[in-house]
Every structure is written in structure tokens, then in C-alpha cells.
Image 1 (tube, one colour):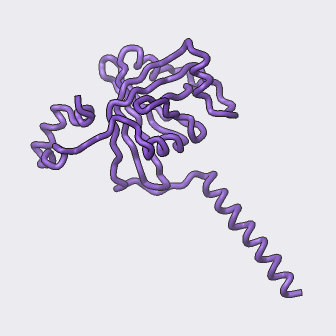
Image 2 (spheres, helix red, strand yellow; image 1 turned 135 degrees about the horizontal axis):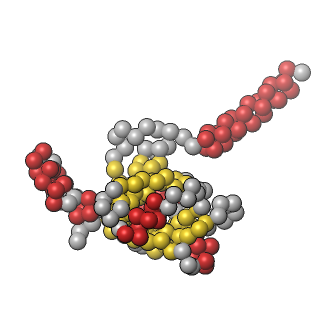
Image 3 (cartoon, helix red, strand yellow; image 1 turned 135 degrees about the vertical axis):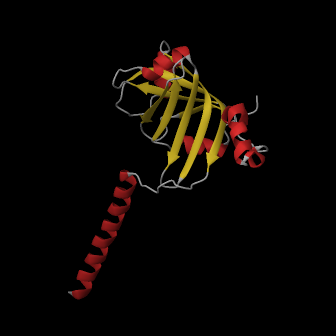
Length: 194
């Protein structure tokens, strides 16, 4: 199976044909291995969305967040993260027990970039060493299990319609630097005036 087949099923190809875009996507190439650019993008995310579905196809999307690097590149086709304890609904875990198909949607609002990743995921509950290795250093959350994600295909989308937003910590750092410079200049000005 080619990586594009994960996104462009027969039904999708039929719609593309009906609406005139199939020719443009027929030769599209999608990745299935993590290159250095993708690894950097993944390891700098502070959040992502994970989609799963039940055996009957009922979809579910869950937001995952943590410090930069909490989603780890294990090897050229595997990602992993410590699954932090949360609201105890276990919808993702339950879905993955009966349907291992999963999807990750990663956004960088500041740079207006997004990456879509199709694959298969599995929950690892009984490997404390793995779970600990996936925990971000110094992060106070508790992990109940690990989730490993095997990449089948990935694609980078265009920035059209992505709003540009900035992380509060990034804005605070820039403002603190600006404020320190203003204070420095005010002291210099005061010294010149005296």
C-alpha cells in the first residue's frame, strides 16, 4: 500500500475524479518515514490532536498536551508518548483495543504549519521502563500508560486558512525582553539628563 492510499481511498479518488482534482493528486507523494525536518517539527510541539474510532466507526478526537518534546520520535517510523492521567473516560484506550487505526494532527499556529499523520496505535500498560522513558524530564504529570504510534503516511498541508497565533509563554518572553531594554534605555536617558 502506498502512503497516499491511506488518505486517498477509492471513495476519495472517485470524488476527486468527479470534481476534477484527481489529476493533480494522482502523482502526489506522501512520506512514511520521519526525516529530520519532520522530527524537529514533532519534537517542538506542545500539543496535538489524536483521532481514533470505535470498531463501528464512531470517531473521537482528543487533545494531547505537554511540554515541548512530550511526543517523542522513537525511530524513523514510530512515535510515542506517555499517556498522562486525565478525566478517566478512556475513549481513546477503548477505541484502540478494538480498532488500532489512528491519526495525529499537529499544528504550529505561529508558523502556520500543519502535519497530518496516518497510522496505527497501541497502548502499552505493563512496561514501566518504556513509560518512564517517554515521560518529559521534570514534568509533574503522572502517566498511566504509553501509546506507540506506527506511521503509515504523513503529509504537510498548505498554510491557507490557518490563523496565526502565539503561545503565551513566547509572547511573555518577548515582552520581558522588550521591558528590560526599555528599563535599560530609561536608565541611560536619566543618566544623560542628570
